[in-house]
Structure formats: C-alpha cells, structure tokens
Amino acid sequence: MKTFVNVQDIGPLDKAMAEAFEIKNDRYKYQHLGKNKTLMMIFFNNSLRTRLSTQKAAMNLGMNVIVLDVNAGAWKLETERGVIMDGDKSEHLLEAIPVMGCYCDLIGVRSFAGLTDREYDYAETVLQQFIRYSGRPVFAMETATVHPLQAFADLITIKENWKASAGSGSPAAKPKVVLTWAPHCRALPQAVPNSFAQWMNAADVDLVITHPKGYELDPQFVGNARVEYDQRKAFEGADFIYAKNWSNPGVTNPADYGKITCEDRSWTVDTEHMSWTNNGKFMHCLPVRRNLIVTDDVIESPNSLVIPEAANREISCSVVIKRMLEAL
Image (cartoon, rainbow, N blue to C red):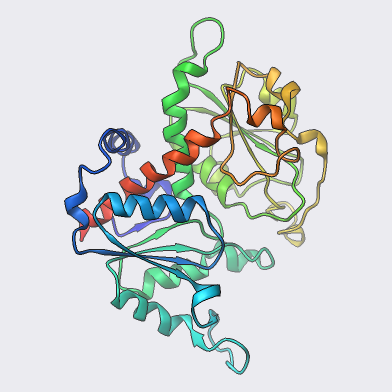
C-alpha cells in the first residue's frame, strides 16, 4: 500500500478488520517491520488523538518518529505555484516536500480545508503534492475532505459493540447506524462525516444520514446511504448514533460552501433524542463541544463510546502503517 486516503486503499474490508483485531490482541507482534525505519508526521493543523495515536502505533511497530509542526517549528510554507514570494513565507512546499522525503520512510500528513475555495479543498491540493513529490508512501492524518484513520477506528468500534448494542429481542442482521449533523459555533470541515459515510457504505451496516436541508454531503461520499431530513425519524430504532457538525458543503448552493447556514439547537443530541433509538450507542470523533453537539448526560452515559472509539485510533493506524512497511 503506497497511499492511504480512502476506504478503497485498504483493500478487502473483512481482511483489514481481521488484521485490526489481531493487532489489538498483540500490539507488538509486528515490531520487527519498523526497525531502522522512520515515520515523519507533518501537521499543518492542531491535533491531539491523531498525533498521539499515530506516534504510538509507529512505536509499537518499532519505528523512529519525527514530528513536524509546520506552523510552529518550521519556515512558513507557500503552497501555490506562480506566487511571488515577497511576503512572510520563506519556503515553497515543492522544495520542502522532497527534502522531508530524504529523512524518512513513510509520511503522514494532516492538512485541513480552508473552507473558502471548494474546488481547491476537494482537489486535496496539499496532500496530492506530498503524494507526487515526496517519493515516499503517504497516508492521510485528516485532510481537506477525508479522515480515514478516524473512520476505520469508528468501524472497529461498531464491530466490537454491535451485539451489545441490541435492545430487547434478537438483533437485526446488521446495525442501523445514523450519522447526524449537530450545531456548532464554528465552521468545520466535512472530512469526518465524509469518511464516516464512505466507510459505512463499504461495511455491512444500514446507514442513515440526517441533517438540515442544504447540508447535503458530496454524493461521492453519501453513496447508497439513506438521507433523512427528519432527525427523529432517522433516530428511530438506531443502534449507533454518530454526531458531528459540518459546515455547508456547498453541494446544493456553491456560494454557501464553508458557511454556517443553520444554527438550530434542536439538533443537539440529548437524552430525549437517544430515547428514540434502540438503546443506541453514542459516538463522536472528539474533541466535542458539550451541550452544543451533545449534552453532558449523553456523553457521560454507559452508552457513550467516545473513549473506546479514541483508543481504537491506535489500532486503525497500526494496520495502515504495518501495510505500508510491508510494501517497502
């Protein structure tokens, strides 16, 4: 595996899941693969879970790790071609990328959407330059449009908790999973919901996406999911509720891209919302704005999976790095 951006990159999903549970049972089993190998983690944006889980996964696999915070510990980087560099940016990404490649064997990149130019963001301009010019295998640690390590960890968490999630009576053949929009005070990218929808479409789940009208995700990620604008109807009988805010994707109206066009607090997930479900489990990628995305009582309830979900980030990343090391 030379790149990891979308669910298709992981290959057969059943094999990837089996590998995830194998690694979870013995996190150091493949430590020999990373001996004398170096992972470079490049952050254009802040991180907590991604930084810690990716570094831990690499260390479990025997790797050395270099962490570069582009905005804090390096020259400011220009990303556009044709720019006269007479401002505060001292180095161009097109020189910096191959230099970075000289010092490592694998590269992880984290670069968020700017939320002003949809075409630029959805072209994954920064990530694609690393793939093209670094000369190294590259994986996404969240990009302008996707967060595959999170979605992979989400799927692991759902598989682990599916039987336990069933309410009264015998469980259905597959879980009902609901991705619900929730309000937020800042404009956020669509990377997490995009990847969650993409991975759930590839898995054996019944996926429903619910959000206010106008917040439709890009069709390439929605896939075969059912879109339901009535949140209560979407929640009915759900086994898993995945709450996440995203700014307007600009699908129905490109001029709205990256904007907050709805602030309806009735979409906040509270105890009443969860009562509509099939004793559903609550999920969120974190960090979460309490009592905006979800109320205290829901996120602190026994049905909250946010901590196991975060812990599984180490496992999803371990599978990805292992496969990249095997391909070197």
